[in-house]
Length: 410
Figure: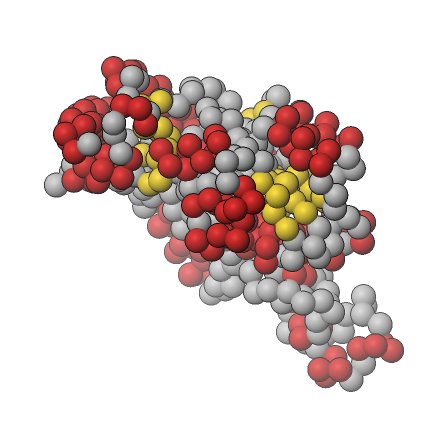
């Protein structure tokens, strides 16, 4: 049976050679290729620095933990509040909570899925103890960053970007991930730039980078090159404190509590191959969104089709079932699956739909109408660069048949 997965990663000669190069060097833990990726990706996004970690989830948790530790960002302390979206992959909220912070949810735009600045402002007028605003550029759609930055400046807050799904998306001529104090990305298999499993943090703050490198290495006291190699004495560590401790080996001296979020050399090597093709990847995805919109226009009375915008690097092709047409999303997705077209729900409205965060359900019931609507009726299918015109025609046929089947079941 024909199969059209939401994401795909086809391994060619470039990818095979990248892996062979890592193996031939004999160093599998992060080293030359990780450093090369960090330089190249920072340059691509337009920031001074990039720190690679093991996943997008690790990137956000590592970043928030570093902000908590950094005295410069004194408002970011345990128990402080972070205004964010209820419509996102759960990792965003997990990172906030695991860093000891409190998520505060505001509603989203129904078409671009980003948090609404007027809702952010309303919550800021009513809420004490907010330290940051954390927008998520869902499906690659940039949030309203000018308005959010203005609010962050007005209320003396940090602006942090979750750009896990927005590699290459731009806002006012700048790439997502360069518009706040820091941004995070994921290079999961289905994302715009792929590496299998990897994440990174982008920032201009050199002090924050030092903390990130410490935290991702279990809180190692120093991150200099000498301290990551066997033996030797670190000139940055005081003799009075460290002489005789752990035999003076700086690799095993830790001055803060951190995580093991380091990467192997394979993911950054693969990501570098994709970064060289990035513009072509994004263009192919945009072309596929345009073609899908054209092919599916006849179903617009039943499905809300995505907005096309050349500033968007599309993670996938989001659709919203119009509930007044008698189609249940679950039945529709099941029918699509029967034809070989993979789909996924648009994550759900976290405080209302995710059991892990049921403690927020009563507090936010009826207060997030757009996110609740999208959480119940939105889903997404493929628009990745490997789709052919025949695949898109097949998707059209599968959607037509699935609509008919879903209408019969109502």
